[in-house]
Every structure is written in C-alpha cells, then in structure tokens.
Amino acid sequence: MKTDLSIAPIASEPRSFHFPEFERFHLANGLEILLLQQSDFPLINISLCIKSSALADPAGEEGTANFLSELLSEGTTNRTSSRIAEELEFIAANFSAYTDWHAIHMEMNALSQHLDKAFEIFSDMLLQPVFPEAELKRIKRELLTERIRVVDNPARLNAEQFIRSLYPKVRYGMPVEGGEKTIKKIERSGIVDFYDEYFTPANATLIFAGDIDRETAKKISQKYLSSWKSKSKPMYSKPQVSQPDKTVIHLTHKPGSAQTELRMGHLGIERKNPDYYAVTLLNEILGGYFLSRINMNLREEHGYTYGANSSFSYRPGLGPFHVTASIQSEHTAAAVQEVIKEISTIRQELVKEEELKNARGQIVGLFPIAFETTAQVAMGLSNIILAELPDDYYNTFRNRISQVTRENILQAAQKYLHPEKLQIALTGDRDIIEQDLRKHFDVRVYDVKGNSID
Image (tube, rainbow, N blue to C red):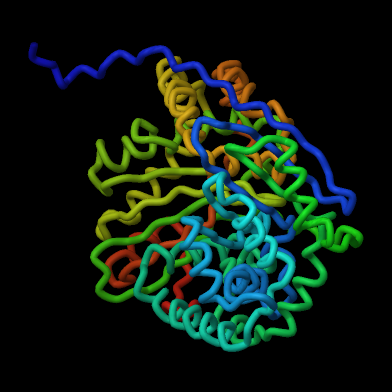
C-alpha cells in the first residue's frame, strides 16, 4: 500500500510511564544516599554529586573546580592513574568526573558482580586524591591549547560572546573551564584548598541505581565511606543578575565567514519557578522543536538556515533564554528581525490549539525516552537533588504539562519574554552584515579575542 508522504501520520497515544520508586537514607557522617533498585540487568550506576560547582571558583582562578574533577582519576595515595585505568578495565567498569554549574559529578558504571571492587576504587578517588603536579601541568596545557582553538570554532566563539554580554560581571560570563588568564593562574594548592572546603559528606549525595538492594548499598557505603570526615556544609551565594537595559548586538568580526553564527536572548527563569510548565510549552512552540515558529519561519518560509531553536537553560539563579541558528550571511539582519517578530507575536496572541496539541504531544511522547538506561535514571535522581524537586516530580510531569492552557502560555510569554532587552551575539564577516544591522540596532564590534574594534 502506497503511503501519502504529504500527510503527517496520526500520533498514537503516549505509552505509559512510571518513574521507579526510590528511597533515601543517611550514614552517620551525614552523607545522603539515594537508592533505586532495578534488577533487570546486572548493572549498577554509582553517582556522587558534590553540591558545589564552578560558581564556587575563587575569583581570578575560575576553572579550579573543573581542574579538580579532571584530576580525580589521575592518582590517589594508593594508586597511580595507570593503575586506576588498568583495574577498571579488568572489571569492565568505567569512570568519569566533570563539573557543571550545579555540581561536581563523579560517576561509575559497573557489573553488579564487581560492585565491591568498583566501589573501592571509586571511594579511593573520592577520599584519597593527590592531584599530581605533572598531570595538572598536562591538563593546563591541553586547556590552554583548547582556548586557542576557540577562535577557529565560530559557534563556540559566538556562544561565549553571548554569555559575556548577558553576564558581564558574574561567574556565568566565563566558561566552566575558565578563561586563558585564569587557567594560567590555577595551582595545585588552590585545588587542594577547594577540595578541603567543599568535599564533605554534608555537601554530597551518593546515588545507587541498578541491580542493588538497600542492605547491600548501606553495607558497602559504610564499609568505604564511613571514614569520610564530616564538617559543616560550605556556603556560597547564587549570582545576582538583572535583565539587560536594552537590545544590543555584539558582533564578533571573523573575516571570510561563509555564514553568521547567531545566539540571542536574555535572562530566563529559575528552575523552581511555578510557571516552569507553562514556560516549557511556551518554548516548545516558539523554538523548541522542528515544527516551532522560529524554525518554520527561518528554515521553511525564508530559507535563511538549516535549523533554528530556542531554549531556557536552568542554573542556580537565572540561567539564559536563548535562540540559536547558523544564518546565511547576507540574510543576517533579516533573520534577527524575524526572530524578534516571533518573540513579540507570541506575547500578543493566544497560540493556536493545534500548536499546543502538537507541542504537548512532542514533550509527553518523548518524555519516557529520557529514562531508558540505568545511567539516565541516576541522572534523573541527581536532577531531583540538585534542583530541589519533589520526589514525585517525574511521575507528575506529564500531568502538569497536560494542564497548561493557551492562556497560561500567553501569560508566561508576556512575563518572561523581553524582545526589547535582547542581547544578540553574532559571529561573522562584518563587511557583509554590519551595514544592514546598523540600520536597526545598536551594534558593537569585537575581534575574535573579545577586544572592542568599533
């Protein structure tokens, strides 16, 4: 039977979903432990969140937390980095550590039959890191080399310019890994000080997800982490930020660019904002998926780009709302105006019922896919902890989305979208795009190192 490709298939009912039950308990030293037992496969995910992130970096030494996470697997008082790698390979386990704006994360995946050995190695990296000087120097060289390469990556160059313009005086204005000047200043002593201050049971949550029961989880935690000395939870404040005063274009001149990298937006909302569900649907309709207004305008109607999207990024404090696209250079000014038009329009009228239905179906239908693996479930638990969400968040999410009305979306758009206060970062050839931009906008021009060249 021939299929008519001009007609979209009818969506089926979303499959049922229930986020697995989990439980909490604590060790005597105050360490919080979350356990989610799933015995379908003999696999266990072990995750630890230190609830201090790149926001805790010392001023002038931004990137310290990132260095610390990079160095956790590079040696302990009991093992060299090569021995750690060999022992993990022997039991078919893998380990990773990274820093983001929410926490420092340690994660290990292992077979349940090797849990004791895997957790012994994991706890060794947690409790006995030595942060070797030689490895610090190596990582520093690699990061500085990467900073040099940023100028050859227009998308990343543009993303960093956007963040600098939106967060000119706070930590968010610099990448998690820091900048060239701050990376050079980081020393081992500063990393040790950071570890001593923030790595404490009171500032951590340990997560077990997979083929493990409560008795085993408690026994192995006590065996290897009861010696972790407790101290008071360290404090640091969220960035204090405010919306931009007006719309400004920040143009990074990259001669010879065949296209323009575009990122534009303003401050968004906090994750615990009660309007989160309305904002989620608002963004989906505006620029969150292929059928969104911005993508259909820029791609399908005008052919300015292969794709455009928008998103609200959630961080401690106010993360950014931003629209992202790669635009044909000669259409840069027109594309910027079309995005502003779409942001303005969605603030002025109710979205169509069909738009709401399609966007809701996209979100609800794809939601279960985010929890298909043990690692994804563990990440979901860490999100509950770090964003301070209720334990039933995932089981009520789709119902909360289904309750959002067109009126709720209009109210959210009017409250949280500010087309008159956009910071617009463009990376492209000024000789092609600047003249048209200056007809409509306040334009400031920079070289690829961020220096003003107006």
